[in-house]
Image (cartoon, rainbow, N blue to C red; front, side, top):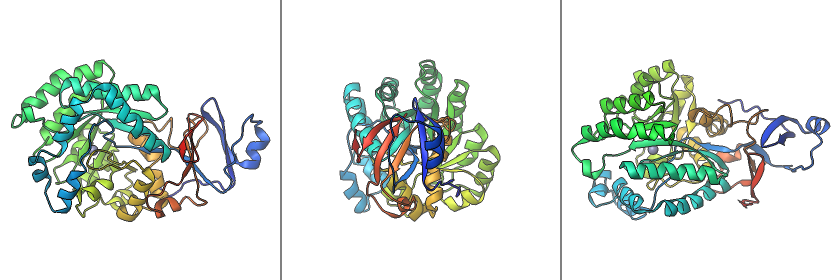
Length: 392
Ligand code: ZN
């Protein structure tokens, strides 16, 4: 994960939204007669960032929970005070599709100006069929509007809705027998995800949901071993998940099985940071076991991170990844995590021209500086969509 293939004094030739050549500037200029050129002297040109894990579509915000967290309130206490995920479910159910699209347009703008050109986007704040379909339709509409690309994931198993409290099995049965066939038939999602956690959807329920989704053509991915060592990583290997995400409490056998089954690890360092738990995924152990690591923001109301450059820095400072590894995890490995590796994630001939041009002379500054926007220009499918850090 350390070999970025850097070209000093490099150039990229684009046509019709695709990369046609990458190489030394003199070479590219000799071989191509471009009607339009863009001078990036002194800057760093890299693939547009990819965010492999977001809960992109939600209404409302939960800033008052920050003070509760600071004062030591537990997740359960926040939930009991009417906050937490179920309060976002209430806000999101109440929001119209147009209102959600308006919110998402603004959110997409924030991602784009920080260099993110593609994201994985989950449903999961509906927890009823009507709202889950509404959220996936919002994702579809956002894709139509562009320029941000969204890869949709159905996460009906994000939490147990209040109307099913104490009846998890019934909720899982409904999701599998009635909802998944509809989501699949309407081509609303590429992936099926589950929040596999103690007291939420445990291993048997998670297996049932992921295998049912798979039968309907939805690729499995999973929130695994975030708060407890439950066997989520082992389940990811068993069902052939593309990615297992979080993995703070992965067991040694889970690690071996992920490696054997070729499951990628998507790590989310902003999640423990905002949960205020001082425990992070052991990125070094995944890397030393040759398990590819991708990065995700976990963008959601409790972890509201829209700047992927900060995510890269968190991967360096909190996961002990090198800047090269973190950049790899935020581009080509993130593309693998969402099954888009043939299309995006690197500057290679034939790939879509999704490019971030950074106002820094050395890529390592990405992992080093915290929170500033170092993106100067963003090219999406060959078109400049951000110029001087603002939407073009
Ligand atoms: Zn998540």
